Image (cartoon, rainbow, N blue to C red; front, side, top):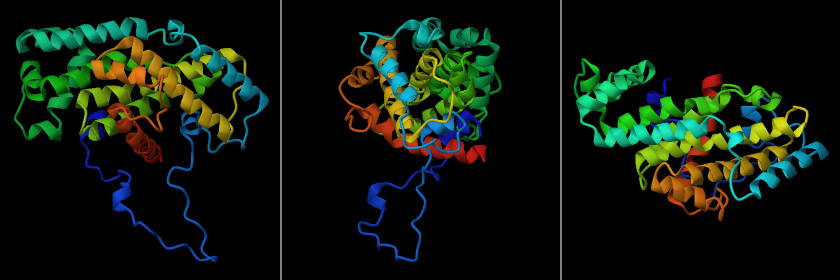
Length: 299
C-alpha cells in the first residue's frame, strides 16, 4: 500500500476507542486462556527484526548504553552528527514550503518539474482515487492545483526528508534498515488520519519525523560498543522513551512549523504517555495503529 493510500485509507484497522469498548467486560473463566495482547511486541523489537524481547532485563550492557544516551539527553542540544543528513535537508524543506505558499501555481510547477522524484509523487497523488473524484489532471500544473497546498506540502516533506532515514553503517542501524522509513510512513499516515484538533500537515510531519529519534538512538547504540542483540523488555521500553526525547530535541531545533516546535519544547516537560500537547495526543493515539499496520503488511 502506498503512502497516499495509507493516508486516506478508511479506518478499518484503527484501534477501538475507549468509549466504544464495554465498560465492564466479563472475566474469563479459569479454563479459558486470556486473549493475547493486540500489540505484544515492543516497537524496538519490530524495528530490530526481533521476534520478542530477550528477557526482562536490562542487562549490564544495556544499562551502560542507556547511560550513554542519557548523557546526550543531558546536553542542552542534540549533537548534529546524530542526524547528519538533517542539517542540509530541513532548511531545504523550509525553503520549498515557503515557495509553495508564495509562488503562483505555474511557477511552482516549474520548480517541482526540476525534481523527477518530486514530480512523480505529485502526479501519483493527483491521480489517486482520493483526488480523481475531484477532477482530472493531465499535467504537473493541473496536478498541483488539484492537490492544493496541503497535498503539495505532504509530498515535499516525504521526498525531502526520506534521506534522514538512510541506513547508517553500525550494527544496530543496519538491523533496523528500511524498517525505520516503513514505520515513519505508516505513523505519518495514522497521525494525519487523527488530525481533528491540529493541522493535518503538522500531524503528518510529526509522524514522519518521530522516528528520527530512533535514528539518533540507534546511532548512539552503534557508538556505545554494545554488541547487537535482541533487546530485553525493559531495554526496549527505555529506548522508546529516549527516542521520543531525542526526537523532541531535534523538533525543537528544526522548528518547521510553530506547533511542531512547541511539541519539541513540550518533550522537555512531559513524556509522550502523559503529554497534553495536541500533537503528542495525536502521536500517542497513532502509535499502536502504525505498529499494527506495518506488522500486518509485513505478514
